Image 1 (cartoon, rainbow, N blue to C red):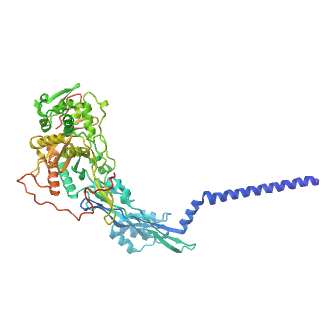
Image 2 (image 1 turned 180 degrees about the horizontal axis):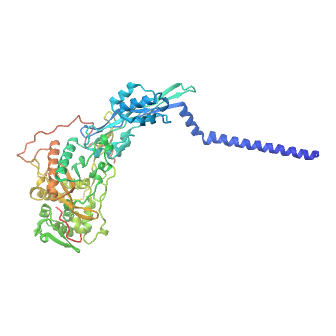
Image 3 (image 1 turned 180 degrees about the vertical axis):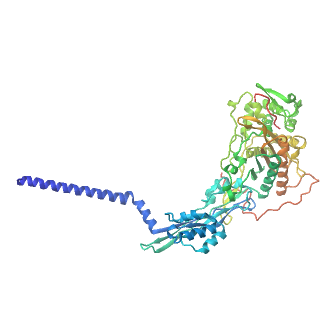
Amino acid sequence: MMNRREKDAMTMKRILAAGGALAIWAVIIVVRLVDLQVLQHDDYCRQAVAQQEQTKVIPAARGSIFDRHGQLLAVCRKADTVYIAPAQVTNVYGTAAALSKALGLDRQRLIKTCRRDLDAVFVKRMVPAEEADLVRAMGLDGVGLMPENDRHYPQGELACHVLGFTDMDNSGKYGVEQQFNEDIAGRDGQWFVCRDALGRPYNPGARPATAGRDLVLTIDTVIQYQAERALDEAMGKSGARWGSVVVMDVWNGDVLAMASRPGFDPNRYNLYNLDRMSNLAVNRIYEPGSTFKLITMAAALEDDLLDLDREIDCGNGRIRVGRGWINDHKPFDKLVPAEIIAKSSNVGAIQVGRIAGSRRLHEMITAFGFGRKTGIRLPWEEAGLVKPVKSWSGRTCATISFGQEISVTPLQLCRAVAAIASDGTLRTPRLVLQTQDREGNHVRRFKPRTEGRPISERTASILREMMAGVVADGTGKKAASDSYQAAGKTGTAQMIIDGAYADNRFVASFAGFAPLHLPRIAVVAVLAEVRRPHYHGGDVAAPVFREVVDGALRRLAVPADRDEILLAGVEQPPAQPVKTTADAGGVDEEKEKAWPASL
């Protein structure tokens, strides 16, 4: 038998064990309470709110987009989305059959949707008004309509690459829709109502949506249409695979038109491959060919290295460079600088490039903005390809002199031509005039911006006269307008396919400005993958330039500078002007073998 001391010890052990167990239990309770009330507090609060409150998003109306004259390019329209709340569907088969007939959807898939374990499922987003009215009239249990905003582009394909589009979630993709998404999108609102333990609603409320800001572009829809029409016609005749036209105001950098082909309809963007949505004027680089001879000539003229009366040996159509030969499109003996540009002599341009020297030529190229982005407000702009002088080979200076071993975008080239036309001032291309509220009051304005002067007024004047000779009596005769004196430069360059120059694929281009003596616009037309026999820039691209110049200058009410031509049928502005001024002040947002001929 245990004595009293042993019994007391046993009792104490039991008390300690019980106390320990109680302490452990208490610790567990405390830990659990801390977990519930501290660590998971926010999560449980959210669950409680979700059980007690019902919320719905009130979609914000996306801002509209206008051209410079107030022509509507993009707008939001109200549309309904059909949804199913499976738990509330009382007749699965009947509901599926009715919706299948009304919306043109698969009946079996609708049956599966009605049986899904979800609160709500979208059936068809942003349906036509007649379909929404039909669904509404049927009054099906568990079927509802949710208001949304449908983006609509009333001009269809017009300026599609400039605009871009919005996806099903009202988010901008490509073009200014993407670049200015934060300005245009607005802020969604929220409708909410609380429910008690019995599910009865009380205390309803709402946070209203904030509409997005409108966007006013520098684009003129009439000039844009003319550019797209001219490009379409030229591509149809030449068989070109892609093309681009840029029209720019030479005095403020405003982009009046920016056309790319192939195009797409932003109202039905889901029917196209993504490669059709690329804005080729800023996203595609190419070798400019002989249009680049203007930059070579500028390099030699700017430092008075070239006498305008100097006869330059053009080698009867070929010149040795390194281990190979470079050919002209036809043999020339001796030409003065203006004739080199007018007749587009490769050998002559190489000789001028040698006079300027590699370093000076490179300096002029970069001064004109090649090799860097222009700063236009569009996504994914390419900077082009300009190699540093230290990586030039023994023939790079020669090839760059007539537009090979260098890559540019159509917009970069148009900006350079605009600089020549405007006495040598390089400007940042401007695509957006302002953002504004729904009343037309501006929120942000974008001023014209200059980036310096790559050439003097004297050099610019000489280059303009040389470019006039191209149109008057050179390779660009088909650019000559009946109404306006114009100036420009042709370009024809073989395309690089799989690392080598292709024998039958060319980029045909023309870059110029008009009118000659009082320049207003610069125009660049580029058509790629054209084939023989008609592939030269003077044959393929120069007519595009002519048509665009005639239409654009008449649209701008620029008087004809040829006496025998009368201005007739000048188109009127399409709509009431938006509250904006084009130049308004405000916040500044900122082959080892013979080389191919290149006209």
